[in-house]
Length: 550
RNA sequence: GGUUCAGUGGUGUAGUGGUUAACAUGCCUCCCUGUCACGGAGGAGAUCGCGGGUUCGAUCCCCGUCUGGACCGCCA
Image (cartoon, rainbow, N blue to C red; front, top):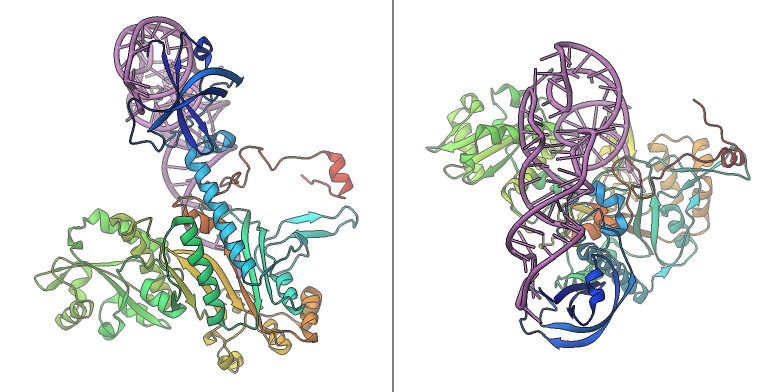
């Protein structure tokens, strides 16, 4: 403004306004965005304060200026509401990270870690590092293999998790362990998944589930207070897996809003409606329903979109009905008897102009399909606030999952998970019904942590391996070192692992895990900044005894 | 591996079978003594991702390919 020059000077803590008189310091004419400056002057109250800015009351009446370094015009706008796409931001990540909003997220993430670390340190947990280069094991996710230079043709695997080592630390008698552990999984990425990610890995001895839950809840309460200044209380909801699916259609339910699923199977046991008839002929055939008050205003296009969501999530379709004049309207309604219609309206307590959505399939499928529709309604109708944080435990997961195609059971959590004490006798007669001492911590529909009490009885462990189809020989070869360790007196133990990146994503209200990782990989598993992975020198390959074919 | 969406000045978008390829922002020059999403005047900046085809003519239509996003499979 004439000879008056205003400059916003930014550092990590924020922005301060400088005021120069160009006639007294002509160098100020040369200053451009992102230059590094040294300024001397007097901090003063502003003549015209700006109440919208945290530092809007003051300014620096600048006297001298040194340009410490110049800067080219950056390819992206360095401000919180930058218009650059993520692809461009990632390529110039070091500029993207200059944006205050990004710095805030990294600082908040650090505070989350610090608070967890302090809590664990104060409660007798010992921070112990375990190897990243370790042995390839058959169960679980695909591993990154690292060729051994010293031993031609042999490989390390990058740790998918410190699971085996932390259990060994319990065998060793360290009682309480934690580690901020980097883990590696060679699987395809998602908005909430990375190749290398961080777990807050925890293991304890001699604790019951209830005792362990309380410790973890206290830690979370502290994190919420420190990071977001939100007061929570311990005693989080413990929701059995069965109820989570039955009521919310998910094993990681978002309980910030209602729209719970109802089971209406009984009403339609004699239904002539082909869709229901067919579903009820299945094992555990189930009919689930959601009622949305005043949802009758939904257009055909809108309900079709919900049907697509249901189909995408494993069910054949969605029955859409509207309540009008105390009866049902919709394609399927003509198949219902008047008794069935009024029983449904009564059971769902459906008022006039309600929308009723139903799925019919085997129990878990019907629940999951309608659960996905429930989340679609949440997003469509904005039923939640991002600054609302609802924690719960999902507990009592089944021990096994049955894989139809291979006609066999696999461990739902992992093969070291302890079955419920009073159900071990069912292992032979009805393995599908056996529940386990495993649990997930869920926040706003995200699984932020998962864990279990472990098997400490050698015989039960062997039984478990046998159930999932390992021969004695295979066990010895792959897990021999692990099983042997249990022979010498193993305390009952169990633990959990928090997905730190995902947890930080939810707490910072970010849409992607990439926002809370300084240098993340993109969706096609590349580092946009360094462009890794890349080809290497032949000499390097020779040393590793590796030849590229093709 | 699959489904799907996108690729046009530095950035983000609009648009069309024949255009001077539009808008916003950024950038440069000048004016402005209280701005803070400043304002005013002017200016530079685009092989419309790449290859092929259809056509008199393709940024636009078709095929292929590459890059990126979301999702499914996968992730004990």
